[in-house]
Image (cartoon, rainbow, N blue to C red; front, side, top):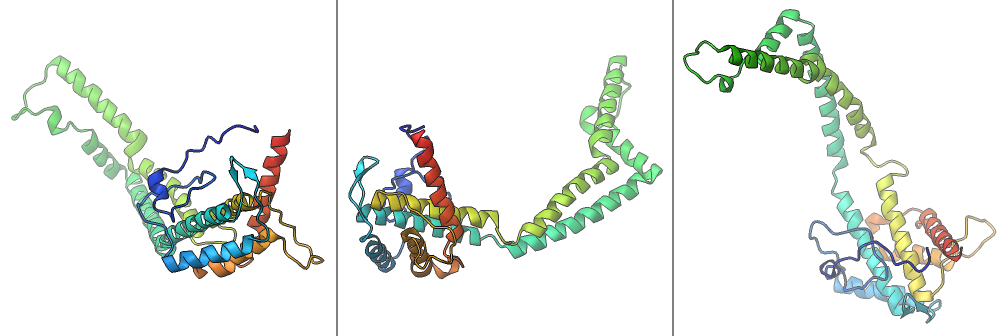
Length: 287
């Protein structure tokens, strides 16, 4: 509803000190958990500030937005925070050795299948299965610590029988070779699917989420500089020029971001979605 304050928690000040000293206009649903500092070198910070400031000046306007005036400085600060957060998240994600994870998952699946087959062989051997069952159900030393054993009273005998029955039921329901084999085979298809999907694929959801949040943050930064909602035209061969927001994404992608994290289409799809989201929020607020 329009006028309602965001319920998202503000980023703690100690977290902000790890960034290039920016005060964000909006809450970023992402927190730094490992204590790593995310900031640019002084040389790169100066280069990014210059590039962003030169780009936004022709579009910047001074109007009241969220209690403060929009303008070049406000845009630069918010855009740099968005870029710093994006690069931090991509760098952290890259530490996940997916090739090693895939090998581990495949090895585990093979071992699960081997273990399941071995347990089924035990279950198929009545004498061996019964022998293991007796070992499990037999009274443990802590149940009858008397040494040498003494004759049990009727009450103690009933307790021992009831306890053995409970153990037998637990064994049959959860721990018998047949049950354990079945449980392992329930896990096998999950791990097999994980092994297939652990490598990045087209439209990888985690990478997509990080890219979308970058574009959402840059769209908010655009408003903080211009006082206007950004627009992003859908693909049209008749249009010779990109929208200004599309040019911003192109600048960030090709001239500012670490080359390892650049996008092949300048985040076009994500930019369109970010603008659509803002338009929807604006429309809902007017109703």
